[in-house]
Length: 128
Image (cartoon, rainbow, N blue to C red; front, side):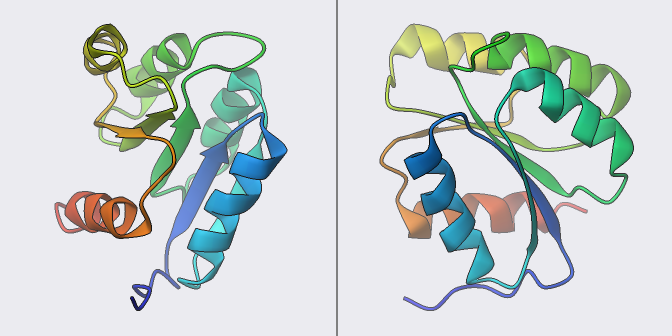
């Protein structure tokens, strides 16, 4: 599988688990994308407001300071068109529904399949 070229793109990874964060960063580094990485929802909100060039957010569902759903609602109030992909090892129907209700654009179950991740990212980037 070849990686897409995202060299002109900036992605925000919001992940408190170091192994998961490293895995996602590795997948995105292969694409040439600029990657910003934070470990809390509060830092994600701050990073989103401070970095106008973020094209997409990859956010873990369970974060230490507030839920990804709360963070997404706050981010979407200011940047309603910024795609947010929620990821979780807990792919319960209720989590998927809550994610959609919070404004998340996509829900991916962990472990993340690289091809599925890239396909979803391509879908969001092609809408611009």
